Length: 307
Image (tube, rainbow, N blue to C red):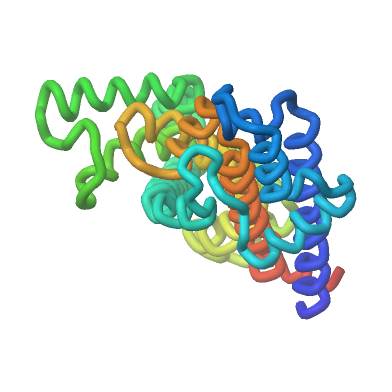
């Protein structure tokens, strides 16, 4: 188990360094000089331009800029915003709780609803309930997240006036945005769990368990479901990236603050350090979640610990 943890940690560090390098390269390949963006066409003296280039480290050779950049990132320094000169890390951390609470609640809805529907669909396969769940799952996957969000606002906020349509506040402000994102993920997980369980049902070990006289409920929920969870766990790890990307749209639809809104505003203002920092923070979170997913394989399936 220790070997598995060490291997996954090393892979995560390599992926994080690759992400850092890619983001740094894109920043320098994209057209536009950060100094020109900072002064925004205002007439300034060459001395001011020189001082700004020195402040951003742009007067250094590229390889020195890279190592300086990596060193700062590992110390939690993402630079300063070109718009308001505020530290990027401070700006991101003030909005991070809003995005992480939205993402976690969305994932919780997607996992609970998706696993429940997937299990029911497999247990009652080829019956009316199975057909209904498959239809609902297809509906959830096919509908764009922003369309589901607008539909929920019209039904639950405008027509029934049960929940607020926008803003940030108590738990009631989270329900509609999280449900809009979670339903799409639930459809994906339900289809994955159903397919994995149906595949596991035909495995020889299931026939052996039934031949030994184990109750069908024990076979399905203690053995078949456990073996079917590995591909579903992989889907859950990948789903985080989808939810974080979807937060950009959902936070705009519901007028919520968060990392998504920061990225959108920074792109519009060409505030490259903020875009860079937000992408790195999101990528780091995605890497951490996938590390947890990889380690969970060893817990779910003992064969992984032996490889």
